[in-house]
Image (cartoon, rainbow, N blue to C red; front, side, top):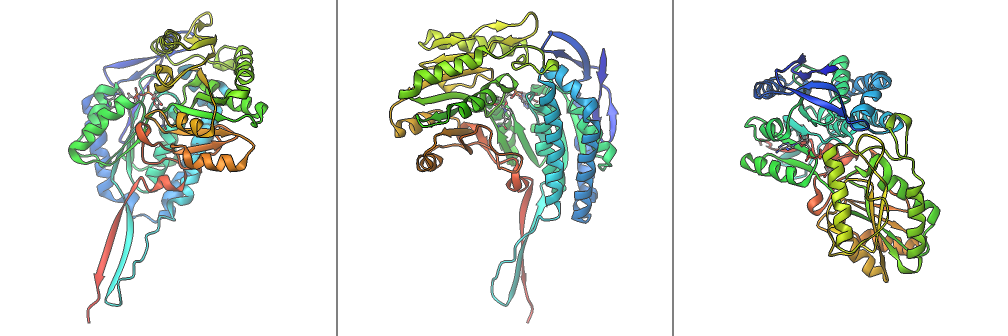
Length: 475
Ligand code: NAD
């Protein structure tokens, strides 16, 4: 049985308490990780504060932070071949997707390395008696709480801009998938990250995550995860008015018009809802289809789902397991509830595989606004489809949830697409390709999907605060 430690203040640290890590493809425990104690939380915060107070990352030439990030990116690329296997084992995901995750993590560091020396303030004219300018300063200690679905790339998504801006970071890794991202700490260590500028702790959310979020000496919280946990963290943050970035869940819709390219659409469906077994915050979990092509699209989606091969991530199977037994049971219960509420099960809705936590790719037709499946996040390979009659009805239905993470439009009418980009309420709109965009494009939600933005140049400004300096010139 492999055993892993936490990275605190430049050291690898053990703990009396351990967390077992399971392979979702087999249900077997294959590793343990040290479960951080409250003393570990204190040690991480103390080291981070010492790093901030030393001003090593704040007062250095910005290009030195850029160089550090480039070195981290190079170390991530160097360790990826060894680390991806672990991501497959603990997460169940495809080997190729794990490789992509590490490549993406490296890209985040390269991207924000390129911005580290361009965090420029402005000069504000106040007349000849004054000089006024702004500077951007890091928050100080950034606590970053990471979920289990893409732990490596989501960790890098926040860690890279935070370090680029000169913050010290404490990462709380998810208890279900803490191992592969440990390699990011190794990469940072090898690249020479200053002591205390990064600590990475695995621990149980309601204990270690909550203790970090409520700690008196932190300056920012970046949370990616579920709405209920986000709410608890926002309550904690409110006590001390700590700024937050909240990247929460979604119930995102693709709106498909009769003039859409259906082959292109099927490619998007495959990625949109079946990639990573549908465990993606921005998954295409609803599809609204113009009535004249509704039956055809349902048929094509059903054929696609039935043709997917279920199996282990190590074999690069189309459909990999969901994260855990609990996750599997929740997904199946939501499918059953949908049927009880009147949706028609076209395919799937049952567990699959010989062992492990598989869910067959599932298609439900004739969902409607009153059903739970329309409103609540499933986080599994489950697509709900319903017809619409008019363009306005399509936009209204797409917007008729409390979430607003992403939305998609499939049509060859550019005017209609442009109307849709204005009408749809979401942080990202995809036109004719689900997941179009990349690390360069700002990402984040409206409504219950959260606030603040990650990715792109804009995200860097989540990790700094503006200071205005007004100088009266003597006569
Ligand atoms: P989760 O909320 O259960 O856990 C996320 C993290 O929070 C974990 O590290 C967990 O240990 C920690 N945590 C749990 N309770 C806590 C508490 N009381 N205080 C502090 N920390 C606590 O979420 P999950 O199940 O790991 O992830 C799935 C959810 O994440 C889905 O809702 C998904 O949509 C969302 N998600 C959003 C994005 C995005 O960018 N918007 C990306 C990925 C996942």
